[in-house]
Length: 171
Image (cartoon, rainbow, N blue to C red):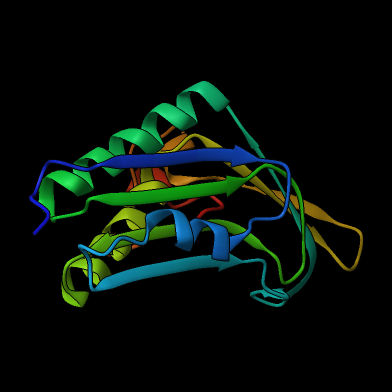
């Protein structure tokens, strides 16, 4: 059975192309694991009352890849994950398409669910990727990411909102 802290391989990719989630699943699937959790973050139609047309993602690629790999390694040090992969889109991402795919293989389902959820939280907090939302009315907004806020680390789970972040758009 796979051991904690000993991944066989880690997949980290940034791409301007559509994400092939089935190919990612095939790459992380192994006979040593009975569970593979796949998370897809798709572009949704509404952000609050604003109707979204598409998103644009920009990144500091070398740093984003480095932090994504660190998060994968940290997950593998917490759960028995022999194979793990994360692919994040850059550039224009149309409505309904995936902007991120994360696949985690573990021997049992609970570890797979926990690892996938933890990783997505960490990715949103730490990875230097910027997101611009384009709206139907022609307006657009850069959404301040967790890792990118100039006022320090923050989480959507913060309650109450820290004083230094009350004016930030990411809340």
